[in-house]
Length: 362
Image (cartoon, rainbow, N blue to C red; front, top):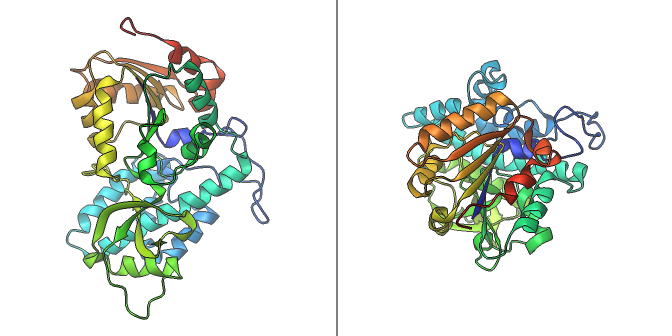
């Protein structure tokens, strides 16, 4: 069984037309041909982009920590944004304002990434590497087993491409429907996922303003009871779904995550499928999610073939070291396949070659 793991690098290098370094055309008046609409890498989640600034203005409670997240040490890759957010999370245990800041970060990430994606899709017209890879997988697939697609990205570029192969997702459960060959797992949530909130809003409070609802939920975070009921929500109206207050199902990217931001049944399905995986593609994923690596360590069998796709050789080698160190007892066959990213992995034909590899027991 094939499993593909997507990280931020996959969406960053998702356009075969506008690869990193090629500036896409201007998006609307006042956007002077910049690269501000490309899906960001983790270090650039709080970059000084116009649309990100608008999202920060919508949730000003996080402005107090933005300087720490824009520190040159972070933006130049010398320190990770996950480490900085981990520090803020630890501070929040004894500093009440920290809870508001982190709740605002979740809302900020949902709004900034969904708007960035909307603009990117307008620029690319949906012509992406995700679309081409899904076609290659379908062409090589024997139809007798599912294909596991695991994405740590909040955006829905993958889901948008999947519409061409198996239609729309009408509920969160549809992501892992047993009737479809592609099963999609999003351990860190999604810009179109929300969790219902068990709260009695003030009598005079209007559900007609989703942004106002989110602001109220942020200010009430200390007493907030977020349920485990996941629902789909239009990203543009996050805060209200089906007439009920909801909160973005977005995991804050901290260094040591303790829980997954997805329904329990989704995690259970992934655990059930992992022992059947014999081939893994890792595209733009840094393999820093320790809780997910623990799942692989517990449930993958020995000798799984792994293909690592990264933007440069140094990143690919670092991922390989992390994987081999964590899965040492699983003895994976782990190759740093590409040093030129998602686009070149497909353009070179290497992805197609990996998909055709068969094992003796197949």
